[in-house]
Amino acid sequence: MMRAMVLEKPGTELRLVETPQPTPKDQQVVIKVRACAVCRTDLHLVDGELPDIRYPLIPGHQVVGEITAVGGRAELAVGARVGVAWLGWTCGDCEYCASDRENLCDRARFNGYHVDGGYAEYMLADSRYCFPLDSSEPAEQIAPLLCGGLIGYRCLRLTGEAEKVGIYGFGSAAHLVTQAAIYQGREIYAFTRPGDEAAAVFAGELGAVWVGGSDQPAPEPLDAAIIFAPVGALVPKALKDLKKGGKVICGGIHMSDIPRFPYADLWGEREIRSVANLTRQDGNEFLKLARDAKITAQIQTYALEEANAALAALRTGAITGTAVLVID
Image (cartoon, rainbow, N blue to C red; front, side, top):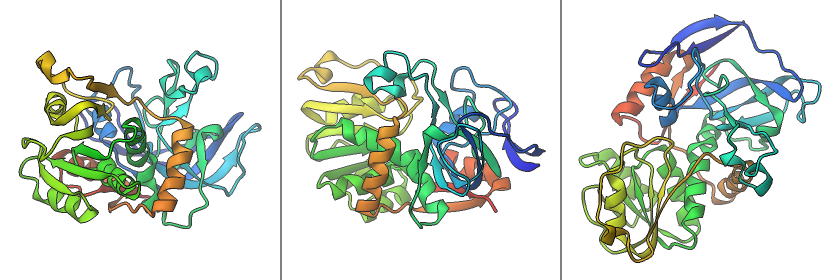
């Protein structure tokens, strides 16, 4: 048996239960979870804001642990240390998978969403979508890299060669991608929730060249903007902060409706683009970058049974960096 935090229906707190440990088949592995970072997507699941949610569900998709059992065709061995991210399976045959865009696969399944995730002592995963980890860093330090870091990296990569990058919403993903961007020689302009002094100080400590509220104009035209806050009104705001030819990258899986804005704000070959999920190549590239750049996650740790408290703190903005469940 194992302990797990289960979401039984939307709008309710997770419940601690005892449930049988999973059994691997084919290319699956069982992972003993050491740490699972908490993501804003988990809040969207709790609130029922994503389509086709299967309840009851064990959330969690930023997992570090060791393999304890393998299926007959698994590509990894018992004892291997691995990381698990959002992408849990793709079909491998569709036009997206065949063109190195597996993140867009219509049949994709995601950990902690379509299949049970890492808010548990053990979880089941497809060995082909696990990332072997050779780092000796504590599990709770690596876990935030596996979603906030990966999605942030994909957003940053889609800005191209942008030198002056605005980041709107300074939480888990933002604090990791800021370190990556500065390592690459870019300048970060941090837009925090108005009145959030802790986030403003945090962004400055990480090396942002300018920090202000999201209701303030950029001090100079930006080459690109990355929006992590799930606030649609930030899209037209970010467009106003861009120079011609600039890009707005929307990094969230869910966002409130984007309000109407004049075409003049988009004109000048400005672009708006969403980021959907991630690829395994994104993961390999970012984990290498994280090692080279010595990216460090600022974390606040919780026990497994404190998952509801971690989610509540994330919802209210009380987390500086990333909340992580450490599972003993």
